[in-house]
Amino acid sequence: MNGPRKMELLEILAEGCRVHPAYRARRAATLKCKPCAVIWDARCELKLRLLFKMDS
Image 1 (cartoon, helix red, strand yellow):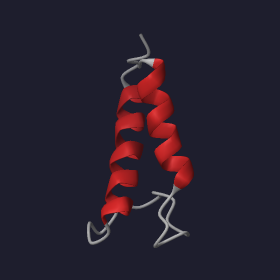
Image 2: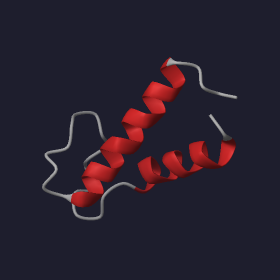
Image 3: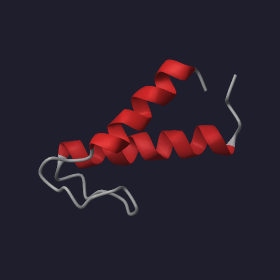
Image 4: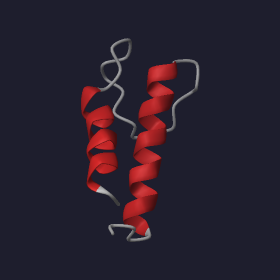
């Protein structure tokens, strides 16, 4: 995974949702809140990239 993209995804996860501050992407987002959906997508992308070792 390239460095800039990894940093962008980690920043998305760290910032969290302003509407739902307790949401930390441990369960799937309901997709009613766009920021929560973006956080969930970032978590899924990070997990997939780490799972398949796309670190190059």
